[in-house]
Image (cartoon, helix red, strand yellow):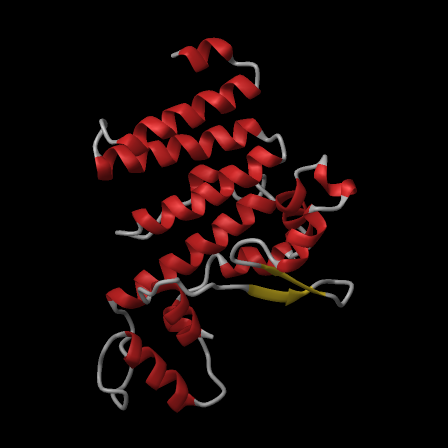
Length: 216
């Protein structure tokens, strides 16, 4: 899947490609991390039994918590150049295409694009894991790939919606703090988006009963 990962995670496109990852659970059922809400999450979110628990976002977290954690942890250590293929020529062509070299050359052992795609995959997987099993992947352990401020803001906005809907305000505050850092660095402290983020952070603090901090 190395080439698919490269295309879906790094190629600029509007609307952007989505990237999902599936595995088989110990019970033999397919379970996966989806890029955004799946149709089953949206449908379940309208059911009374899920509405009071966070709706679609809560259903998504519950569904994805079944992803085999050992496989997810192993994927966090993956390196693109170590990937295997059913045919060696396929591996050669994929790695050279990513490195923008002649497809028939012997693949390089290291290249900046290998690192970029690897960083993107690890980060996107880490974000998905944090949403469903935050105790396994602390938010501050996530590191966005260089130049990915726009993608990070979009992904982190999804996390704030997920945690906010489920009443997980401390986790939500951590994500908003990182969003604020990115916005201040990329947009400047006086940008309207920065002001909106301050407002959102205050709302979360009020929801959690931290009125004094919200006033700050």
